[in-house]
Image (cartoon, rainbow, N blue to C red; front, side, top):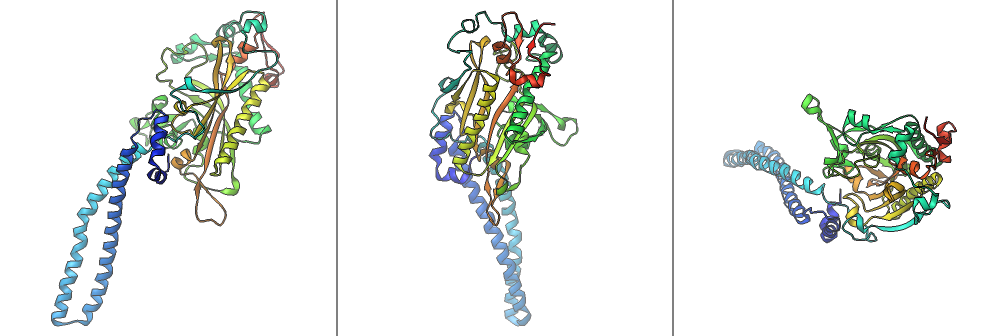
Length: 454
């Protein structure tokens, strides 16, 4: 959520920010509603002040009446009667104002929640992911992404689907039978490799890099989804549990990332500045409807409804340079992880049209996948400043200070599986159909070095 005070002072900044992100939100409508609402609220305050003045005047008249008599007392009584009648006259205006304020607040909030965080000035302007810019690449000495897999390895590759079927790593047919399209079941070594990857990523963040391990709910209230910026836009991507239709007090939603729970953990709190930064990581099951993705990546493990993900979140002080430094540091964690896995990857600077509403900047990390004959997205690192924390009312305060400030927040994928299994299986396959287990994952596989057909 953007700062309304800043929007009033710099409306062109937000008009451009919305246009750069292809958002059709009407900034002028929001300004108009906000101006009318503030006028009405000022009038409400005037009525309260008037009632206070009347109360004080009635008290003063009562004191004077005790000492008056004759015509003076009669005049004071008439004045008292008029003053006592005035609050009743104000009630109708107060009720009308209250109704109008509620109506305008609802309209304001509906538009306000859709105003995007303006992209940082150094983010390139572009219409879509096609306009993203490659920043840098990395690959191990044994693999050159500029060449075909066959030129690198000396044999034609199998896809992860073919490898999984041959090695008994997953079963799509039974997954679809139980849960419909984009469903799967990891089996045998497939499930073990999946868990090994998640444990590797989780230990890497907590043991090696000092992040606090957290569990998070994956069923959350609407307020948590709105607070983290996933609603109202993006609501079509979430699975809804309609508890109110079954007599429950509120509906619930399945989260698409552990970021929701990690950020919602401190909703409506004022943190001690000395406690910042807060560095959290979790591993959670994630759910996405993939609405609008019909016919796209329907086969295999790339675009699925349910997956598991190690996520990292940082909550820090409200300082742009501090946020930028943390953004690079969080990206660095992922680069180290991918290098330990020996997976070729590239960093993409997302353009304004691919940032989404809540990000001031976002860097995507794509990993080489032979079956896609190129790179596929596996990570997104986001810098949000106070966009989420304003919605969550998450602030911090220095000791002895009376004024609290909104925190900044950042997030980045650590490891999402089974998507990350795609490059692992495809790049570590051998000519005989087996798959070599990456050295970094072997401690989590009981020392197993290869996946072979049973």
